[in-house]
Amino acid sequence: MKTLNQINLLLRFSLEVAALIVLGLFAWTHFNGYIRFVLTLVLPIAVMVIWSVFAVPDDPSRSGQTVIAVNGMTRLIIELLIFAAAVAALYFSHLKTASFIFFCLIMLHYIASHERIKWLLHQ
Image 1 (cartoon, helix red, strand yellow):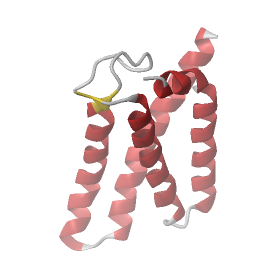
Image 2 (cartoon, helix red, strand yellow):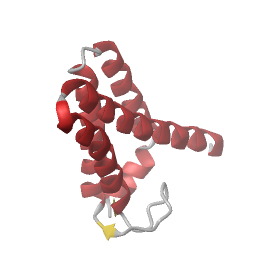
Image 3 (tube, one colour):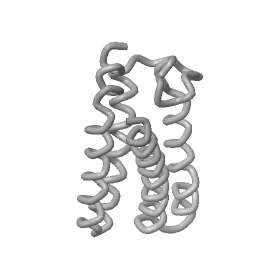
Image 4 (cartoon, one colour):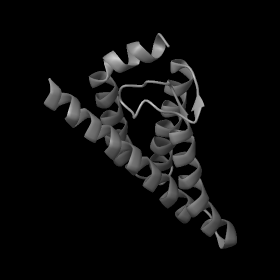
């Protein structure tokens, strides 16, 4: 069970990094001029800051520490919005198969994280 949890944490980390990369690539390929450079840098950094700053205190899947404490439902919504943005970025980049695979991996992660989701919803 512990190995499965570690694999799921690795999957989650990989999905988070992939979401940041996808959002940066989306900005690079869909914008022109000066805004292209700004969004390619700022968008992933902003998402990374949001992801790390807003957390549920004592979340067992994280360090347990937080800068801005939010309830579990808010944290879950933040995560889902970021992942949905990455799926949409892939889809609108004409990478429909990649967006479907990414979506399936996200669902697999959340299915494997059902205990964490229950915990979040009770915070």
